[in-house]
Image 1 (tube, rainbow, N blue to C red):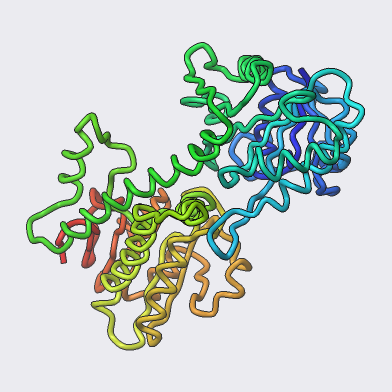
Image 2 (cartoon, one colour):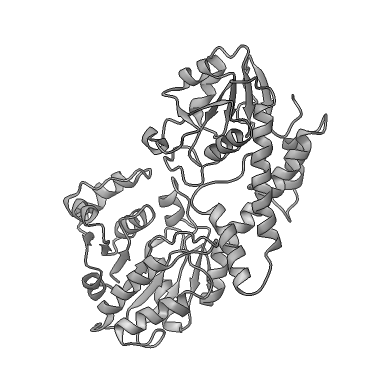
Length: 438
């Protein structure tokens, strides 16, 4: 089967398209980014995702991947069409499908004169009811055909992490196939069998489209709720003399009903998925006339925790002191400031103590991305921010920051929100979140 990835030049779509082509499946990348399409066809397109550029060079030599700015032309040639475009958050916390809807209109036009059976697969994160609602309607209106009859329509969300996209996509813990007809399910089984390295052992959940929509958002909010519970206990331990969150959470994680993953002290999660999916679930439940107590409480607690971490950081600060934040992106090796815990902390400190000066350093972040942030000043290097700051706050577990052990920290207070440096000998006032070491 030939596969088309609509939005295939994006952060997630491009690695997925490349891996599919790497497995010998012919791939067409369809993207409205004309520059990206030209660079893909020229072999000059680059990605910040680990391993992707090397894979592109190998795949390009096989001739199994090409790119076009015409979605309609790509649909004509493909058997399976994945739509993987951005779904930005709305003011009410819901997810906008305007980009997905526009893609469906183009895909529908390409389906008008379809040759053989084709399956359209929505892979973007959407609100429950969107696939068989507005998106199905757009496909049918522009194609003149019936979804689940004349052509297939599935919802197959991806559960992959940036910086690990290739591994997560090639060897997932499970796949989710939201479908209606047996032909749709069988087509997706054949597709995953062709591209996954672990198909023989992977768990495949073939369920209704609506269940898959809820499961996609539900998984992320379940993780954020678990993290919030761990941090609530860590906050308690931080204020109880003799208690240590590391020990407490290790015991709780040993229970098979709970498990140790995502059960450690740290700042609230950031990034493009976790924070917005809590808001999306709350919005979805509100639209059904329901109250989302758990997700609302998780969001409220995360805001409270960030404010409390700010207080821990500035409680020792004299007027006009300098606080240095180590790590701004939401995970090591990533340059994105979307949902940045480091910036959220800086904002909280600034709101409470505008007299303090806030510096920030992250070797992966472009300083230009902070141009509109008037309460944070960029520091060019680790040595510089250490020299200038009376208080340092570690917000990211980056190996570079372990060099602090060899730096002069005399007179400095260091708040380690992750406990990442706890095993080092640091000549400073060291505070580990989750343990009353202050």
